[in-house]
Image (cartoon, rainbow over the protein chains, first blue to last red):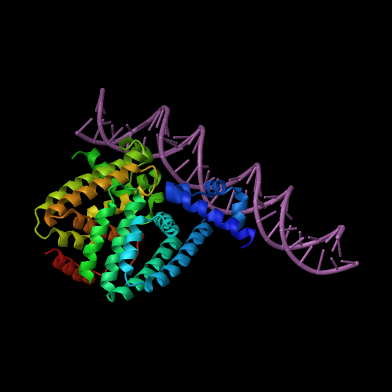
Length: 176
Length: 176
DNA sequence: GCTACTGTACCGTCCGGACGGTTTCTTGCC
DNA sequence: GGCAAGAAACCGTCCGGACGGTACAGTAGC
């Protein structure tokens, strides 16, 4: 881990945070450089363009996705763990997901959408294995998407934590 | 329905289409005016600012939301109808929803997020009444959100219609 | 004479990116 | 061990262009 890698990470963290908290428009090169404590020129040394910045986040998500698939695949109660974490939604992976969700809304950031699709496939693979039913796995992943969407919208009216617990119980009753 | 109202609708249609198909950034005042066959000055005569344009779409969604609540509330199989239409997702209301979803990602368009929250409450009210259980209604609405999110991302991997049909069956078995 | 526009010119701001210059680290050679 | 030299890491500024919004003079039709 050289100094350069460290700076790259700091820049990506700053970019992620800006997009996450203030929307895609806030993730400008200048603002990101500023938040990362680097000059604009310095940022462009590491990420030659805005697209490279998005690609950097996408790559980060890919690493998370592989780890998640491996982790969930070895769990008997993968669905419960998966859904509960969708609701918490403040782990590093969640921050990257929501940032890429916001970026992906824009035409030109196909890389963000592609990364999310790949993550989707990781989750689907893990949950299909755990459930033995791809249709149901799809349903569970879509439900999680819905929860993320509310979180991305910052809506208060999402899911009260206790009701989620009840919903998970009933879903498991259905699946069991 | 005077000429002015007609022009307003044409402008909103164009705005909605631009945002829907090319993202929030594409919905500029100039581009919208152009697509609506109106001069920029003409657009600003009807909608005095960008915010007014967003508010116009939000108002449109409010009207849809009230109609939807009334329609679903009087249906015995509201859940099935609701979910199936989430998957189809090409009705006028769906276009407005997805456009506002994209707009709502941006910090300053709180009006878009608020309108979506109000729609959420309409749906929740209708489905709670139909199901007699608010937690389950929440689950169903979040599932629909997840499907919309994929549609907003332009992802192909939403839910294949036939699998939705199977999932609805199983959901109803659980609920019944 | 009022409503519903058109068209153009313009302002201030911000954006992505290019670029030239400067400091800091590394490496090979004596 | 010392030191030149180049590579890596980083700085600050400038540019062309787009954006939201304003202003205003003109015009067609009811």
